[in-house]
Length: 271
Ligand SMILES: NC(=O)CCC(=O)C(=O)O
Image 1 (cartoon, rainbow, N blue to C red):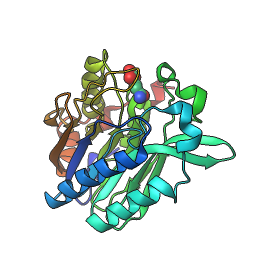
Image 2 (image 1 turned 90 degrees about the vertical axis):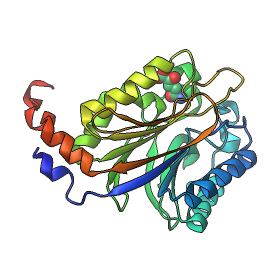
Image 3 (image 1 turned 180 degrees about the vertical axis):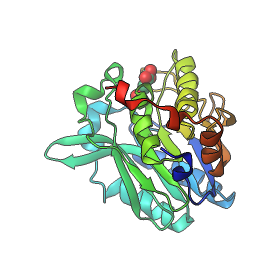
């Protein structure tokens, strides 16, 4: 693919990452936290705020049936209201009632007018945290126009599946927003894989993990923003934090022109 095809309207996006310490099984408390992070992020000029995976409940999956809500109601409607009132796009995953007994770990990207632009249910369920017992995997990817650049959505364990990120890159994504609850002792995997996905696909990865602990895990934080060359634009430690970075989307086409990975692919050999 011609690298110039990737980005016809280079622009900038200011992102905020809310590395929350999620309160186990308490959507009201977590919504209050998310609200205060979003108000702060909007006040400081962010265009979009990224929240962690399952930010409203944590991994309280034995109560998934009680927590899950339809995509137009409950926590999703509250998030849309927050986006609209603060004029900031919001992305992050919650438990979603997808119909006929199906519950998804579902990320939504809601724009600054409160409209849902993209929906992505985690496609690779993580057995080590029992997702396969309670959730239904998604069956489609989410590639969409943020209004500033093209984006894809991914969730946590998806990081271990380079094919997903390559699909987004081939579709023309400038950035992938990834929400996570990634625990110790695999912090090195997290940092390495986020950077690898950015370098190999020459795109931005905006990766928001959680802080704190739940009954079974201590989370490693280290939310970060990586640019298409692999440069770390922002990185948190393990503590709760609101992190900022500005993405200059022109870096995507420049990086792809400098090292023409996409022109040099040999897809006829890969299947
Ligand atoms: N919530 C998750 O998907 C965790 C993934 C994880 O910890 C991993 O090592 O992969």
